[in-house]
Image 1 (tube, rainbow, N blue to C red):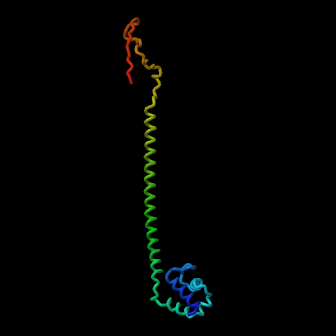
Image 2 (cartoon, helix red, strand yellow):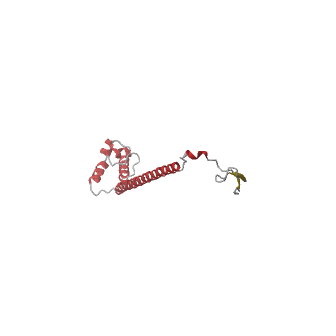
Image 3 (tube, rainbow, N blue to C red):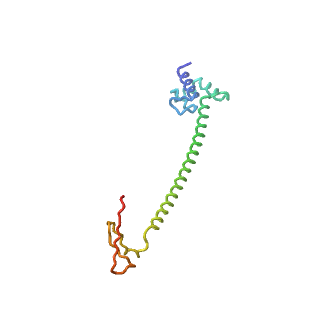
Amino acid sequence: MTETDRKINEAFDRLLAGHPEITDGKLTVSNICVEAGVSRASYYRSPQAAEIKRRLDTPQTARPELEDLRDQVSQLKKTERALRSEHAAHVRELKQTIKTYANQIQALALRVAQLEHDHQPTDRSNDNVTPISTSTSAPLRNPLARNDSRTTVKHETPLE
């Protein structure tokens, strides 16, 4: 076996095993030539070309690692789709929760504003009322008593 034949055989075996060094790993004549570092003309002159063609044309040619890798890629793609779908459902659920909370916050803010409005004094007729002094004693006038009588009422300021 010549050096060229050995290089072609090694390149074919690497591609068949799914371990390319230079190419994309597809099992083509061009890739075998690139992996082996020989021209296409040298490849076709080599007796290995006929042997490789025969091996590839035989249906029993097993490419276990390549098939396993393809199955693994297929399984990973299915898993990725499932995870993306699950993630999307989770995101939709979170967005719905956010909308619900935003609606509740808005309703509570409106209720607070209504309560504040309800507790504001709207009747201004009592503006002339003077608050009672917190001093210890203050003279008070009894409206039922005669004009000349005055009553003194003692107020105690509670201790706080």
